[in-house]
Length: 331
Image 1 (cartoon, helix red, strand yellow):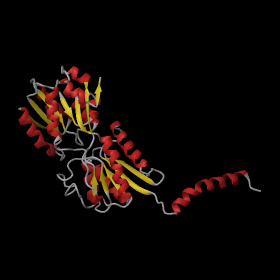
Image 2: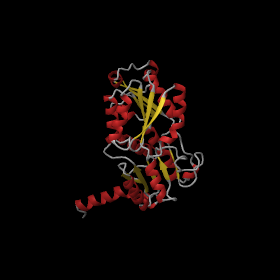
Image 3: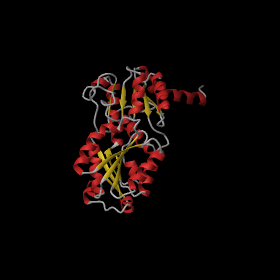
Image 4: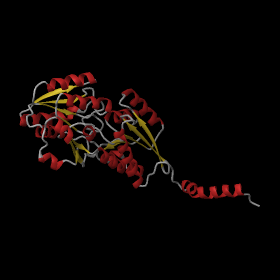
C-alpha cells in the first residue's frame, strides 16, 4: 500500500523528470556574466537589464532554465570594476556582457578567450578595444551608443533652442576617454555657428559648480554635457542639472534621464534599444559564432526629449523644429 506522502513524492519526481531528461539529453545551463559599470540603486539601470533579459528570453534563453546570469555592479569605482572583472572571469562563464568602456576594458584585461559583448560604450577603435569595427577579431564585439558626429549635433540643437548662444562649454571628466571622439565635430560646428568653444573638465561637484557659475555670468552661455562614467551617475548629474537651472544656463545632454531629472534637452542613442539588440549577439555566440566575426554595431535608434517646464523657467521658447522632432515632451 502506497502512503499519501510517498505518492506525493512520486508525483514530484514525475513532474521533475522532463527537466532532468532534457538535461541528460545535452541541454546544459549556459552561464552569462554581466558587469555593469554603474550603481544598482540608480533606477535608470533597471530598464536596460530588463530589455536585455526579455530579448534573451525571446530568443530561447531564460534565466533559471537554460542560462544562469551572474550580474555585478561596478558603482563607477574603477578598483571595484577591476575586482569584479576578475571575479566574473574566475567563474568561467560562456560569455560576459559589459556596459560602458571601463568594465569592457577591465574584462578584456582579464581574458582573451571568453567572449565579451559590450552593450554600450565609446569609440571601440579609438579606445583600443578592437582594431576595426567590421571584423573586430579576438574575443570582443558589441554595440556602441556613441557616434562621433553627435558632438556637432548637440551644439546645433543648443543654438536652436537658445538662439542667443555665443559660447558653449563642453563638460566631461578628462580621466575618461570619451570626450576626444566628439571634439572634431564640436569644433566644426562651432566654426560654422560662430560659437566660442570652451572645454570644462570636471572631477568633482565643486568643479561642476565653478564651471557653470562662470558660464552663467554673462548672457549667451550654453552647456553640452558628455555622458561618461562620472557624469552618468545621479550623484553627479543632479548637481549638473541643478547648477544649470540656478545659473540660467541652457544645457543639452546625450541621455534622456538628464531631461527626466529636470534638464532641458537630450539627443542620443536609445540605450534600452542597445541592450535589447545586445541579446542577439549573445544568442549567436552561445550557438557557436565567434565574437571576432561579428561587426561592432553603431546605434540605429535615437531619441530626443525636451523638458518644456525647464525651457519656460529659462525663459526659452522651444521652436517648432524641436517640438516636431521630439520623441517626448515633458510638461
